[in-house]
Structure formats: C-alpha cells, structure tokens
Image (cartoon, rainbow, N blue to C red):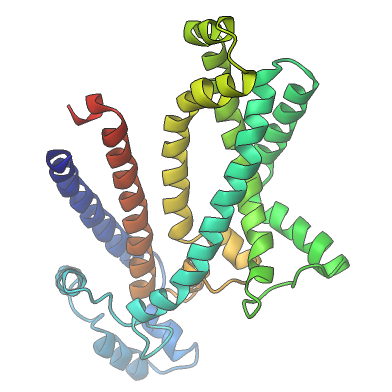
Length: 308
C-alpha cells in the first residue's frame, strides 16, 4: 500500500501544478482589466496605472507567474482584488463549511434516492417499477440544475414558505435542504442507472443462481451477493461527486445565495478577481485529486490486483 501511495502522490502533485498554471494564464488572457474594474469607469489613467503598480500587474506575465507560484508553495494564495485587504485563503476558509455541508447532504440524497431505486428496478426488469425508475432517471438527467433549483424555490420557498428563499443563517439546515436536494435529484438519476445495470448483471450471474438454488433468502442474495458488485463503481462515483461538490457548485450556490466556494468563484469571475479565481480553482482541484486518490487507495485495499 505504501509503494502504491508513493506512485500516486507525484501524479497528484503534477496535476495540481498543471491546474495552477492553466488557471493563472487563462485568467490573464481573458478580456478585461482588473485595475479598471477596481478604480471604476470614471477613474483617470493615472489612478489605473497606480493600481496596476500596487497589484504588480505592470510586471511581465512570467514574473507574475513565478511570484504567484512561490506564494502558493508557501501556502499563500494572495490577496483578493475585489475584497481589498482580504486574503484569498481566509475567504476560502470561511466558505468551506458551507460547501462541505451542501456536498455531504447532496451525496447523502444521491445515495438514499438512487441506490434503492436502482435495486428495485433491477429486481423486476421491464416491470412497472423499472419503467417508472427509468423515466424518473431520464427526467433527472435531463433537468438543468438551475431550472430545478428555481422550480423548488418557487414551489417550496416562495409559494408555500416551507423553506427560506436565500441566504445562510441559523438554523442553517433550513437553508441547506433545498440546494442539497437539488444536487441529490440529479445525481440520484446516475446512481439509479448505474445500480440497475450492475445489479442486473449480478442477478444473471451463475453464483447468484447457485445461491438461490441452495435456498438462501432473497434478501441475503441481493445484499450480500449482488450489492457487492455495485460497490466498486458506486465508490468511484461517490468519490468524484464528493470532490466536485466540495470544490463548490457554482450554479447551485448562486441560485440559492449560499456563501460557498462556488458563489465565491462566481462573484470573482464577475469582478475579474484573478487571485480569487485562481485560488478557488486550485482549491477545487485539490479536493477532486484528493478524493480520486482516496478512491484509488480504497480500490487497492479491496483488490490486490490494483496494487500490482
């Protein structure tokens, strides 16, 4: 296991380095001038030039990249342009708990809704429940998250006032259920289809037929023999989803007004806040790489063939 980890860590570092490099240069080639946005449309050329000097934007792009890379290596993500005087690391640290709460609840809804639906659909293929799950999965996969979020907000927040419209304050759970449920509905469709496909394959396998012939209860056959075949692909999806959600879901957090990483990134793009954009992208990439690494380690622990 240690050798496997040593092989994967350098790959993760290379990926993060590539993400930092791409994010930095892409934010510098997009149209727009951060100094002009900070100074305002009526600011004089001298004021804009002064802000350029203060932010170091008058230096060459290579020098700016090298300076930023040294800061990142020392754990400094820079200072926000738009939130003057606020460090990017501090802004991200305040936003992490919100994104983490949405991510964990969203993944929970995905699993609780998708996996049982897939099992039920596979147990009676081409039956009424199977067709209903297939139709619901198709709708869930096709529905855009922002449309679904707005629909839930209109029905459950604006019309019935069951949940608050937007914001994030105590009690926090009231503000988290709708965005997490929106995430969960879309993801549950994937989980249902994945579970159904793998369960069907397992139910038709010889060892399941043998277990049934021995008189094992159907519940034992389903949970002990069939569900194990679903765990590996589910583990992959779970790790990817959790890493993606922890990095911030821009659309969901913007629709529901949650002050998470996604909303922070969305606002930074609107103000061309280069340090904030780069820091948020790096943070999201770190969690995605971390979760993929943990999934690979879990595979290696489960299956010795992976370690070889």
